[in-house]
Length: 238
Image 1 (tube, one colour):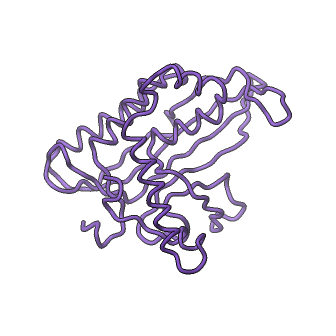
Image 2: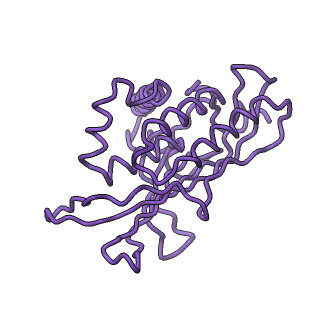
Image 3: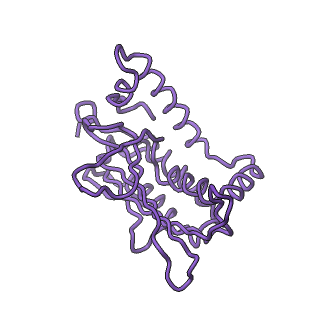
């Protein structure tokens, strides 16, 4: 597959593996288990070492999600506290590029990560309270290339709004969930660790900010429409 013509984003196997493993190790105390993240990292390493270019799927399934521990008290706008818990699942359809080697890349045909939040106020009956998706588009999407979608639309064909979002790797999405649910505990935990964020994730964020700046700056009409229509070069995040 020629990603220069297809419009698919390219990422490095090594970068995504390292980011996933670093986050899994750093955030382990906030999840019931992180074996799902280590499985994704292992799959990336295995695919990168296999000399084929057939499409592959990376998954954390809804049946075995990455599940946070219950919060000690999610702080609501009213000031009251609520016990909640989140589950994260993801599906990435990828195609390996180039020959086997340390710099091998893959193209992303589909990348969607779902976060589902449950209210645990009644221990015998967890209640679904919210769900959102964090995605990387492919080809020529109708909305922002990196976007998030909130909840389930009343009409399945009306998939709006597509809100601008970061480079939604599994680790970045999982950390976003921790930052929302563990509003005090997660920042304190990261502050105690000099390498709380992986170098890969930091680089992705800086490249994403630079890409957004260039997209808006290059727009001749509406800056919002310029960002909405912007497509990164396949190697923008290598």
